[in-house]
Length: 66
Length: 245
Image (cartoon, rainbow over all chains, first blue to last red; front, side, top):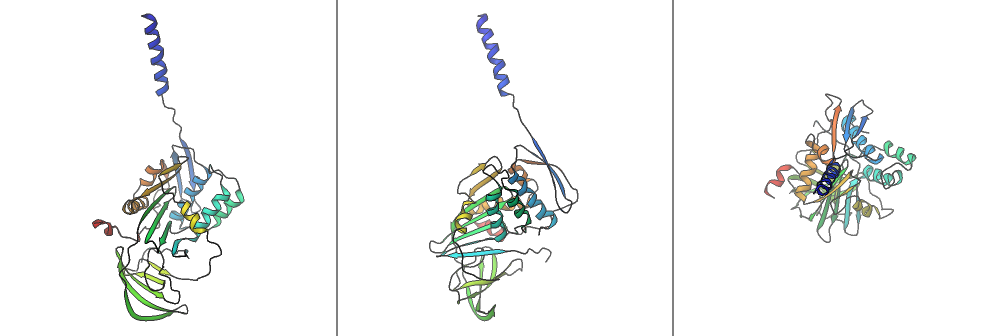
């Protein structure tokens, strides 16, 4: 019986460790040519393509674009 | 008018099909293939610098028309989210008037129709005998060279024509808007929707505060206060059009 309880305790400890979520956040700042500034938190690590796309849109919306 | 947008749109017509898109949007997407690798990381900084030197695209919509099969594909893009919808072409009930004019050395005639929620006044030329026009305007006896809505919100004007040097732009543009819902690297999201759902999502992404951020997984922590978006978004198809659909 003691062995069963010990096994159950170890299993419970491992299960509790497995459900602990390790979440990362990524923080980026954008500064446009006209001085508009925006800081964002992302739940994913962005690529250069994504960051460039986001900045382009901020430029177009807040600075009027080219 | 408070808001004015200057567009650089292009209409490619090949064998009964056409695609209407922003020239700068196409160039940006093309350069992206050279500038970024499959993971979206920079592989050629020189190509990236070419992107940022381009004027910003003013209309992130692409319209594919298949006149032989009476189909259309309407695509939208909002930063990292694309939407695609497909449907049957609706033939505008054009009233062909007797009015004629010469526009850029082309003999043109005038036509009017209530179409997709707006009254459109167009000039077409039978000297170019194709039923195509800008956006989803079509069905006149010749190419539409000038189109304006009755409220003066939109005005398409043909600037020049030329023979296509290559035919692969249509295929490339089609690839940019997948026919299935997918998510690449948790960043770029593609939606395949009904015409109404695509229009509604596009409208919400452009006008509803926070909606794009929620969809894209972005949380804005801080922004420059008092700096509202300068450009007001007005859809080509008004919201009222969808009420009875």
